[in-house]
Length: 82
Image (cartoon, rainbow, N blue to C red):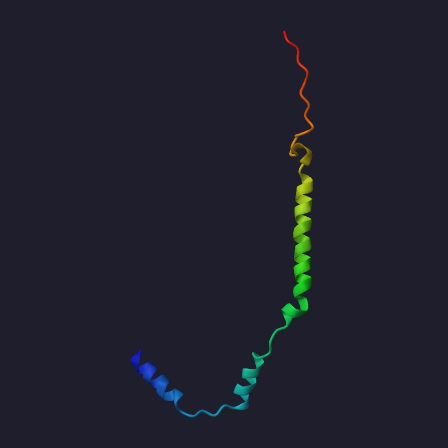
């Protein structure tokens, strides 16, 4: 690896003329994507509504009357001494 590093170091010191092709390829990646600014809020709202809707549907499938606490609804039965 030492000779390769030496060659790379020597070549990096040479002046290299960059053509229009290199300059054009450099600017292709410089364009910043504005996807988040444009679609971020609608995607977030849509995902939130989907999540909430899924949970509401799932919880509606359970028979919640059986899982509610019976405190205040249950009355003791009258009993007789035998």
